[in-house]
Amino acid sequence: MPVALCDIAAMPLFAFGLNHQTAPLDVREQVVFQAEQLTQALRDLVDRRPVSEAAIISTCNRTEVYCSTADPRFAVDWLADYHRLKPAQIQPYLYELPQDRAVKHAFRVASGLDSMVLGEPQILGQFKSAVRSAEAAGTLGWLLNKLFQRTFSVAKTVRSETEIGASTVSMAAAAVRLAERIYPSIAGQSVLFVGAGEMIELAATHFAAHHPKRMTFANRTAARAQQLADRFFGHVIPLNDIAAQLALYDIVISCTASPLPIIGKGLMESALKARKHRPMLMFDLAVPRDIETEVGELDDAFLYTVDDLGQIAREGMDQRGNAVAQAEVIIENQVSDFMHWLDNRELVPTIRALRDTAERARRHELERAQRRIARGDDPQQVLDELSRALTNKFMHPPSHALNHAAQDERDELAALIARLYQIQRPE
Image 1 (cartoon, rainbow, N blue to C red):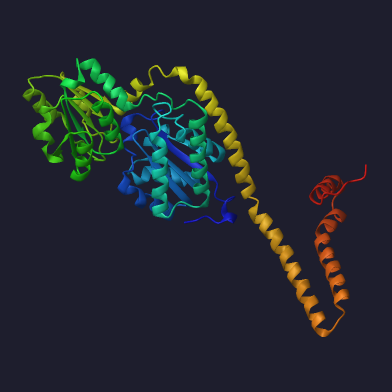
Image 2: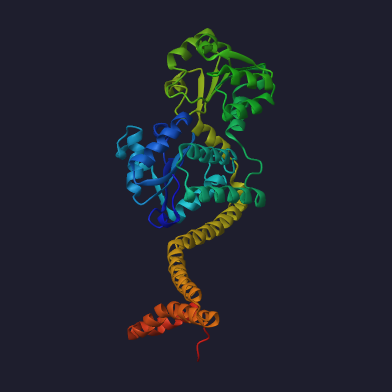
C-alpha cells in the first residue's frame, strides 16, 4: 500500500519493539512472528489500524515494527493484541522511537551495533528478509522503502570503513568454546543438529571445523536436512526419530520455528538414563525455545540458551571501542542527512501546489493569447501582453502580501521575498 507524497507529513515514521537488552527470553518468545505469519500479520496491522506502511523484524534477539502512522498508540497496542497478550504484559519492555530516533535505531541495528554479538552480520540479512516480507504483503510503501534502502547503504559503509565486524565472535563459535570446556575433544563427540536454518548452518560450519565423530541433521523438511548432511558429510534422521535416538548424541544444537518445545524434561531423563548419565551438552538457539527450561535442572544436562551464548560471545569484545565510536559518528551523520532529506520531502505538497498555481495561470494566458492570434491580432503585441499578464499574475501575491503586512512583520517578509527572488536589497 504505497504512501502518496502528500501523506508523509500526516503519517510520520515510527518504530517500536523489544530486544535482548530490554526483555528477557521468556518475554521475547511470546511476541515472535514466524516467517509464515508475517504476511498475514502485516496486512492485519495495516488493514485494521491507522497505519499506512509496516515492516516487521522478528529474530531470536528482537521483535521490532517499523511503520508510518499518525497514531503510534494503536500500532503498539496491536502487537499485544495480535499475540493475545495484555498491553501491560509487554509495555515495561518496549521502546518507542519516533522519526529520527527510529532512523538511528534502524541504522545501528543493521550495522551490528545493537546486536547481542557486536558486529554480527546476520541481522542485515534479517532486515532484507523483513523488506521482502513487507513487499509480499503490500505494506512496504514509499517511506519505509527509502528508509531501508538507506539503512543497507549505511550498514555497508560502517562495515567497510570501520573494524566493527572484524573477528566477530558468533554464538556458534561460543557454542564450540563451551563444548571444548566440557569435553576433552569435540572430535570424539557425536553432534545432533535440529533444524536447518541459517543459525544451524552456521553452527554446523563451526563444529565441522573440529571434526566431530558424527554429525546428524533432523528437520521437518527432509530435503533441506539432506543438503546440510551432504555439505558436512553427515547423516539425516527424521524429526520424529529424535526421541528414539537422542541418547546417541553428546551435543545437541536446536533452532527451529516450532511454537512448542521439541525436547522435554521427560525425554531428556530417559535419554540420560540410557546414556548411563554421561553428560549431554544442549544449545537451544530458538525463540520460542525448542528445549524445555526444566531440562537445565537435570544433573547431567548442560543447557544453554541464546542469551547464555550471547553473553559468552561478548566476552573480550571491549577492545573494539574505537571501531564503535567511528561507526557511531558515521551513523549520526547519516541520520542527519536522511532527516534533512525527509524534511524536504514534506515540502513536496507545497511545492506542487505552487507549481500547479503557476501552471494554471500560464495555460489561461496562453489560451487567451492563442484566441487573439486566431482572430488576426498582431502576434508581437499579443506576446508582449502575454508576458506582461504573466508577470503581473506572478508578482501579485508577494506584492499584495507586502502591502498588507503589519508593521512588525514587514521587514521580515521583505527579507524573505528578497531571498526568494534573489534581489539585492539596498543598504
